[in-house]
Length: 377
Image (cartoon, rainbow, N blue to C red):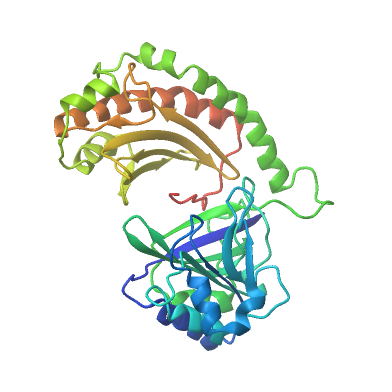
């Protein structure tokens, strides 16, 4: 089966964007690989008084042929940008570095994406559930609510054997490039659609499609019956509705991870924290991944809980209320004592879903390979 592996590496926002691009280019040179460069430099979709594109074209008029205003993806609004994606016009490394060296002060682009592509990364256009990024090394730098954000990631494909204990390594040339970026922060696997119309009916892609079709009724049933399930298990705490809880817990704070580790660690879950996110996971005997994902403050001190069973090519997801009286997705966390009540309720719901939902899913799908690792997205 064809599997794309996405690997994310640590970056420093203080490192100038041009320096990072040069560092990636140097890794390709050392590996003897000549990449194709595809880049995009974008103005804000909402419009600003200062256009980085106007400034760039005034300074580098030779780039005028790269200007376009359209939607980068079908679901996105039109935006003005300089890009060589899908055009016959060249964008040299010198041009890319000239633009990147101006970010963010003299050339305040809203978003910058620079991709280093090469055939050694493999060929793929889509995963089993979504369109995928081009295979290669991708640098992204953009504005966010707390300033500039930066990412450095690699995406390559391998031909994996479901019966093997280990995922194949990338080609030696790609492995040499990736080794120069240090230890990965995280990785995940994307199972690819087959582009071969003559593939046998029971190819990996066909099996995954059958599994997704088979589990859809199970997911729909549990989504529609979630309220009755919560009433049936008798939650340990009858928490008030959101509006009432918000009024009684104004300004409350306190650590959140210790309670999660204490309650879910004994259930076999690990706990990884991120920026306003906690992801708790454990593997089943059939190598599927059971996950509880908690957004605890991306925008406010409230919790949104998602429960997932993940396997090759499928992702069975349920949204969990934390109380029978919850009306919305988000519920105020409040102080540590209130958080402990929320976590106790979630643990009771998860116990029931492990006994019912997870078992029904696993009875429907094949075991996953031992190397299966969906990551934490």
